[in-house]
Length: 326
Image 1 (cartoon, rainbow, N blue to C red):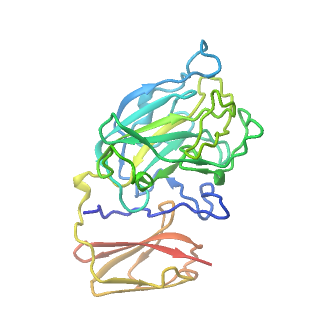
Image 2 (image 1 turned 90 degrees about the vertical axis):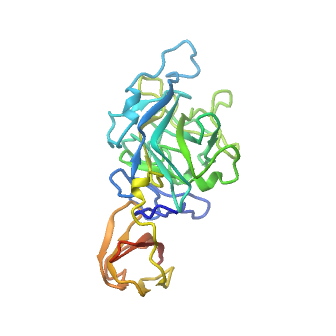
Image 3 (image 1 turned 60 degrees about the horizontal axis):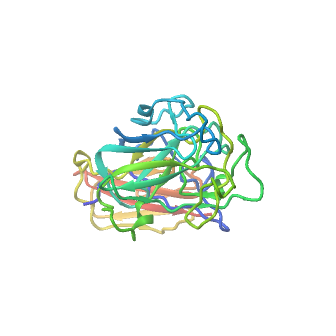
């Protein structure tokens, strides 16, 4: 049975071929570190391989900022409590409980960018057995005619399924459904997440490519001790922790309409509802009460994707994604 928790059932926002925008902008998929959607954090460093400060200088030093244990536990959301991977460095993390492919995003990765457009990126891979890893398919629509310098900017709307898309404190979420056709992995029992630094050079001899064969252009060279992707934390949304399965029976016969809505929202059910909660795309509660007829415009809620959560007097839960359109 699917864990019935306050999840963010979000999908990528795409307009005219572009992807979800920066944190805080309508349509973003960024999830704040304190969101109630995050129920578990990484507890173990399984493997860790530092990358070079400069991949073009094989005799040069490795990145050295931070310790590997900084990637464990809660996301700190600052610039210091991270571990730097260096060029093509990687780290594999384990969890107390495995996680699964559920509705919406299943886990998320936090980097320490100080702004919305200085983005150091990484590929993300997952595994059920620690041996066979499957990479989440990514897309980079960044220009490749001119090399991005070490402190140049990247537009988040040009990036999809690469960790580091959002500023510090906001995680980049990933959906296991994106690898549903992959073999050698049990998507209901994923135990490991590997983060692999993207080398942002457009030189094909050293550069990194997305799942469509596009070379990824991000800040390069970052030939200093904190070079490469700086991992803060990995959080889990759809955990297999049995203690979280507190509501195994969903509320029956719930009708929410219209959906999508232009403002008016009605809820019809035979259950005795004790609480109705509306949660926005970064985990904030924007309404809580017992009204079964809502006027989203009157509540001052902006257009976007929301989660409507109903709890009845027996603590059964119904959750549904709501699209509020202009």
